[in-house]
Length: 299
Image (cartoon, rainbow, N blue to C red; front, side):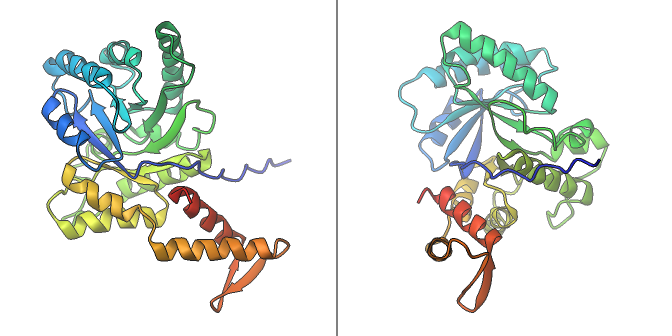
């Protein structure tokens, strides 16, 4: 007998529209980011930090995590779990209670292993179990692409995101975008698989960075398109990208008003499977979308 797959879970509410990377070895950039509009800051110990600067970056990140009240969530991107730096990163930062860890170049097995490390380090530091959350960058190696449907059982996991640069290196590709900045086919596939994998696991899909931070039209279009297909937020590599991302992922008054009307309509007719609104037929998927939008907006 064929076993039917479970339907995709509802995605848990996710508050951060913009996730801004800050190099861990640059206190100046962190100070600027803390004063900016980003919903969440990712203190980076990986790609933006040269190997010989990593020890100093760990010290700067630890200081950032312990210096006063946090105006916004502070996460840390550690080095890949199969590197010599990963455990050193964790020992340096976990005791200072980052809000979460971003794990790059990962598979579900590595995410599970990281969870075990975090459990041990939380216990050693007297931190409540699973206080520290997890985001996985899930498409940066070729094997990872074949595991994007396997994240539902990973504890602590709040979101999946993806990356094109490391995947291009893994493929030996000369580029991951065309001359207009559009993703080439293999990388568009990775993006779609990440989106599907996150929704299958009931967690937030987060759009990857866009390298452009000068073209204002593009900075508005990319996050708008990402939200349209189901992403819940987007990563940024420059403060100039944060405002356009926040605007794109903030539901408009018109969207919220329509969502409320859909929910109200079905509440008035709880036994109905399909109803009419403004000359248009709406059904249960529309109700689900409306509730999801209202949950995102926390209204």
